[in-house]
Amino acid sequence: MFETAIDLEEWMVADEHSLAALEVATPEAYRADYPDREFSDEDLAERVQRRQATALAYDGWATYNMGDTELAFERFAAADDVGSVSYLGVPNTPLYTFWGRAALGEGDFDSAIEFLGAEAAFGNDGSGAEVYLREAYAAKNGDEEGFDELLWATRNELATTVDDFTLLDYEGNEISMANVRTGKVTLLAFWFPT
Amino acid sequence: MELPRLQPLYEQYKDQGFEVIAIEAKRDTERATKFIEENGLTYTMLENAEDDAEIVGSIFKVRSFPSSFLIDRDGKVMYFHLGFEAGDEEHLEEEIKTLL
Image 1 (tube, rainbow over the protein chains, first blue to last red):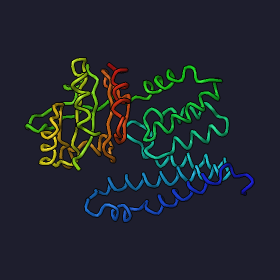
Image 2 (tube, helix red, strand yellow):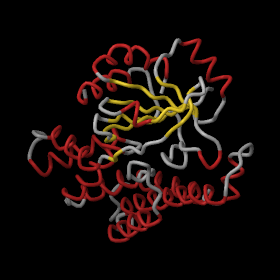
Image 3 (cartoon, rainbow over the protein chains, first blue to last red):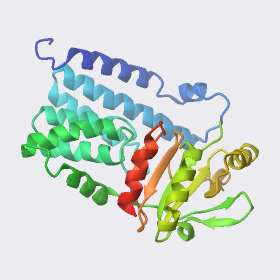
Image 4 (spheres, each protein chain N blue to C red):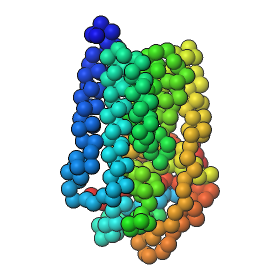
């Protein structure tokens, strides 16, 4: 088994992460992590699902680095099935980075570019994925010429059109998002005071 | 998003058609208004709605803060940022310029 391993350390670290995520992928564990908050059953189910999907993503990466490629890609697909995507349509787990890196390792540059491109553009680990995306792009094309254009094209292709909404400002006025942003470049920032 | 760091960007580019909308997710009105005043923030500041009408978690699925979306003139979300470290405003400025 160790002879076929691709990367022992990646395997062990990913395995640890997977087990840790799985251990807390229950409603009880989630509630225990946030004792002062209340969650609806639906909300809680979604949050637990994310932990399950995270566990599977790490499990896939561990399995790949262990050397069982076929099983690894099955695990990635299973993580994908569990779901848990962000508003922008990208998994909010490391799945696409791992899946893309595994595809890169197997010489499947097109799949690597697809997964890593989505993550680089809109994932939680965009800059991390971009490093591997460059690698995949250069492996496919011989050099990095045109890379910036690829990333820009990916953003355009996958971009979500933002929902409209109406909320109150601090003077009690109803403000519609569409009214503020139409024709403008808009930064929509979510925060809370600490 | 380190909100105060957005104020200079807003002032610099608003005449070219740049807007900032900040949504306070936890409805801590007192602390939010104090923060806005202390930091002289003049861009659009909104408060998340309550319960079924709330949008931050349910529509935008935001769980980690700060999170931000940079939206082009046609309403397409072109960039996403999770967190905001020192120096991130330079990347953000470059991104804003590509969309203006």
